[in-house]
Length: 190
Length: 279
Image 1 (cartoon, chains in turn purple, cyan):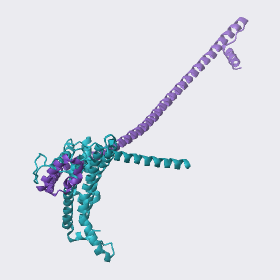
Image 2 (cartoon, chains in turn brown, orange):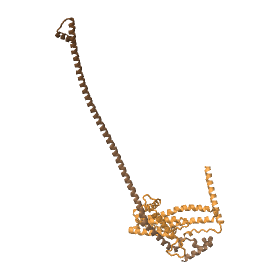
Image 3 (cartoon, chains in turn red, brown):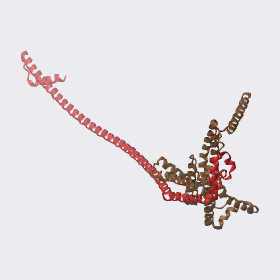
């Protein structure tokens, strides 16, 4: 306690005589750090402070921060995993798309080829049918022409016979039909 | 070449003139200082401990100005690490990310320096680091009080570490902990001498550990106060010491963090020695 009283007298002196205070009085110039009378007090309050800080840290702050950091880490890990999965899915989808495209192309080619073959067959059939029809028509026409020609020859023959008979009649000769026919047939051939 | 040397000597002359002017200013300031101000520099007054609520009697539990500023370190720690993290956000706010950085900083230090098995002592080391760093930074507020400038405080911190580490060393390794002092890589003849040196250095640890912190903090604060005293005495020329104060203050901001870091990393080193005493 003696120490504190000397300090107060120092303070009183100090205000009165500042210029010499530093040199004149050992206590006011000395280090308060070495004033052992305050050590008990300082140590007590330091220990209280440290205990309070320790409990605040261990009971509240550190577990909370640890949990937040762990949460963040797991969130990041999950997000990366999810992103990886989505990427895999995207790659898979692209593969599927490409596969579908290739399949569609093959299918389309097949359909085109089929259609072409079908059309070709139809065309062939139609052409064959048309050919047959044309051939039939031509044959028929030929027959008709042959008929007509034959008819014409007969007509010519008949006309020639009649004409001949008439001419002969006018000339005053009578020839029998058989001779005339023979003569005309010979003439016709010639 | 000639031009360059001329420039150089010119710079030298400028420097000499500058320092002469500075010295003259300082001297004139000392000589012609206003009487009432005097040279009333009491750089150590800022470290005085007094009861907070007046009175003269100071027992071991009397709240003092030091108690107040220790309490404010607790408040600061609660604000940063409890209130600052109350959102528990996955995407942290600014305060929360500072708290997380402090956590990560010390955690990584413990893990890297003291080893993975030291992680269970992390809360204690975190307590030391946060107390010192907050006390140092709060002490940089003008008119404040810095608990870490007191050797009683830093000595207790260092002794807590020393006693804990020594006890832990013996509990974990038994007599094998003494292997810390037996330098097996040295020639056999030298080992006893080295053991003595190692033993002395071991017991000096808490001394250097505590005085380093208190000394740095106290010296910086005292220097600022001395310059402040000059500023009061120099009248018109007080801008010079004020510039000096700004520079020293910037340095002190650095020191405030570095000393907390040094104290913490040394604690980790001592802890590593206790857990793995092999040399």
